[in-house]
Length: 113
Image 1 (cartoon, helix red, strand yellow):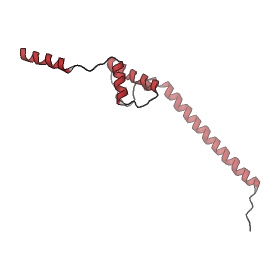
Image 2 (cartoon, one colour; image 1 turned 45 degrees about the vertical axis):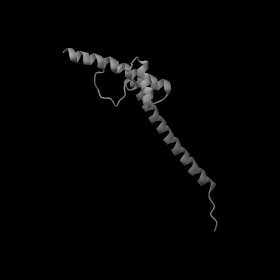
Image 3 (cartoon, helix red, strand yellow; image 1 turned 60 degrees about the vertical axis):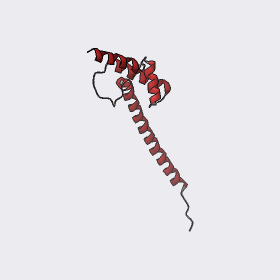
């Protein structure tokens, strides 16, 4: 005997599923809005990586963290490569010292003392 479906019953099931999906979407949207609001209210999270320990940072450390954050925002990269970190450090004005100069100074000081 062939199975015949009741069109009214099918519509009821579809309407029920649609209602449930709508409820799930509203809950997800509500959670997403709450999370976005919390992120926006927490200005500190944007400035300093939450994985770092709580302590007083030196001015140089704060400047470096702010420069890295600005780079990440500008480039759209959450995790910069080491080459990009070096680029930010150089943009801050840091340069590698010429070790031959410091070695000559160090050996002259040790010979005179």
